[in-house]
Image 1 (cartoon, helix red, strand yellow):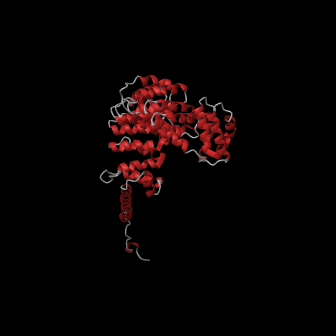
Image 2: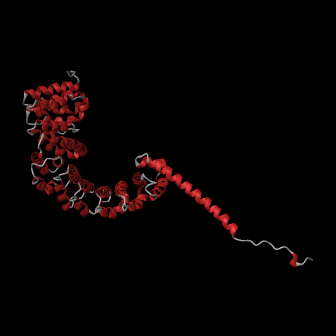
Length: 435
């Protein structure tokens, strides 16, 4: 048996080789991670450089869920490596509620353009960003105008779905801001949340007299949206300087004219007369009345008398403009049709062409006018009755619902009404082709 002392010694195991091996693996993984991140940042920058809308940008990333972590990484790196940060912040608005915490952080960023873009982005997320309301209210005190304007806009957008969470007092205070953009956005926000607080209504009426045209329009549209009772704001409106020339009052005149309340209809002509400086001032009024009336539907028919009242205006332009609106009301009520017939006697030939053209183009497609013309057959003015009978004859066979009324008109005390009714019945029954 060999001596133990003569056996060769085994080499001692040390930790250095294993540590070196592990370090190599970690270094390789680190390099792989760095290369991957560098490639990701490069491709993110390339996508953002296209300056596309949020939805298209997110689609290029593969959807909001894939885009969000990449946008977060991009926004954390230095500005020199990430020049498209504003676009990245705006793209976050398409990621929905998941991006709200990131946008709240950006609302406190040192760069003004990122803070303002974060504010607008929060507004785009709408009610789902309700947790951002306190931060946005604080942003109304930001030293930069762009940030304050974005905060006011966002509060209105979020508050449209959750008006109870919006700090109305802060928006009212913003109406006194030196910046016209902030004032205009604050007025629009109060309209979006339909704020009926007396202090808000008073502030909006005052804003109609603002020196900034955008503020005037925003305040007017806000009051139209809120639609408070006319008696609550009319005294303040009528007390405004008469020589003030802007579109805000035109908006308000349209709003008042469209109110169904008879008191408001009575106030409309006085308001319009007080603040109309030139015929051209009625252009936005006509556009707004046309749009609003189309949205009112049948429940707005009582407001027709407010439009008919304008047909007595001393300006031929105004009479013609409101004739255009009245001819677009479908189906036209009796009062509208009677007003059109009366306008055939307008002193201005070019104004008379509007009702003449309307009546001349009546045909089978105008059957929705028949109920109104049947009512006009009962008017005290024989000329209106005769014109209504003629009009139903022009409609032809589609006016069969008027046959009983026209038969009754054959016994009318005025010969010209009886003659018109007889001719109309022949055309409706097909006994004589319309000329």
